[in-house]
Length: 444
Image 1: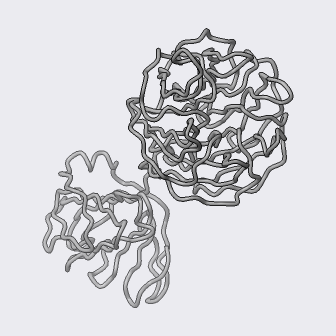
Image 2: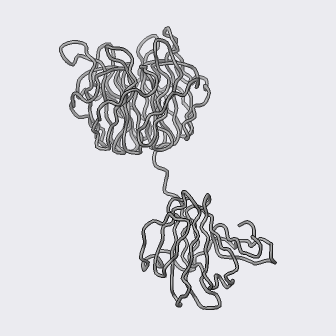
Image 3: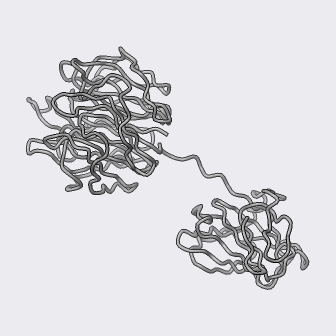
């Protein structure tokens, strides 16, 4: 709690009123308390539409979700009340700490105080139930408690790692992405420097980099903790290959798929919820390389695009393969969006995905394709950020995404943020060492 305004009570936070000092002193909270269970009160309440205005008049027996995203709200209580009349107010947008609610008791007492006090509540997530007791006490809070926020949905942070800085000079450095999409400076290499690898999430809050090329093809992996710490190499998991893709599935597992192990393949390797990479699963779909993958529908995945023998010769493709929430890869779906290779993909909006950038026979591209929460790939959206190939991409901030780095004729360190509505922002330049053929994933 803080402050008294003049001779008015300034109630902040949750919990019943504690001890009142002299005018101008602070009224301190006695701590959270609930004399009547909230669910018992709310069960007989008639809930109203969300209130967004700066003023409102409450009617006994009603519950009001109060959205103060844009302004404070002054709530005028009924001018007359009967014993047992109850009202409930709930912080709809968890924003009362920014814009508080103010209770005007409209001539009646509030916790025995006359209507000369200003009663304010300013705790995010608060649920407040008040009941009229009698003329002496007036309205009394019977529930006054902040509700714990729901578990955060989607990983909050990301990591770009490894890659080629030019002329085949591989690196193992990483760059963390904050929950606001800010890319940090280079973290020195942990694990073998390599390029043309893939990365995905596992265990709900961790990540894994896998496969790639050093002087030769490798099958090693590196786990990423839920604090973004990259572990040392784990060797010998599945067929060594490069130019593959990876994504999450089933809420807490991952899958590596396709690529080139000396020849193009459609083989996949499942990643358990503790980060163990499984043996090869025989290919489903067209064998190809230089593709990408992302999550959709919260627990499924999709592989998209690439380069392979799709029409009697070496061709760019727009083929997709859906991954079920059990890690089963479906047969090809052909011809969605511009056929291209060496692009990136990530999730956005909690349950959707986006593919972006790449190259076709005309050159580097800046187009994107959104993926619905049912795994349907939309038509091209063109002209977002610098055209390039071989970027990394990952989600961050729960429902947002980021494309980073890539190749435009030389390595670049450009990034482009993706909103939770799938809108790609303009270039942000100069974040970490320029490179391409890297990988990215999220963690929490």
